[in-house]
Length: 134
Image (cartoon, rainbow, N blue to C red; front, side):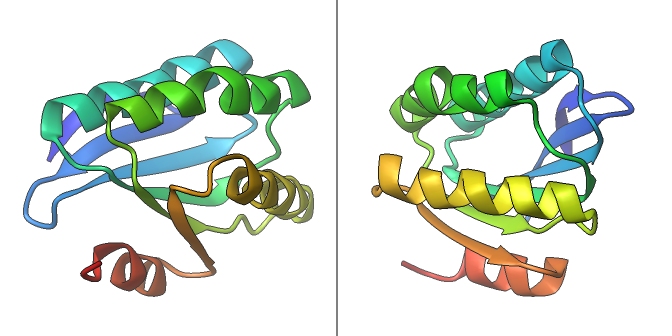
């Protein structure tokens, strides 16, 4: 494993044996940390050459509206330019987190139709989809 970000709210690391970036989100992430962690995903995409990202949001809460806006307007174009192509998203257990995630993911499909994505309630199903051949 190669870590790109690691604190109590989020970990971002590369799994070389499988060729994907794993992110693990916890709680309600403060804006500064949310953006730092998200930017580290772009760094990981650039440095590893993979466009596949697993978002493990099982233990997360909702993201702030201004961070959601930043995600679409700023982060997403840069991530796509870096090579972001495919994601699997493990839905939160938290009701509010699940609602926010669903809303963000629906908008993501409309705004960025070139990035393939799928949601799941478990890691095994998410990884199976993420790692399948195109």
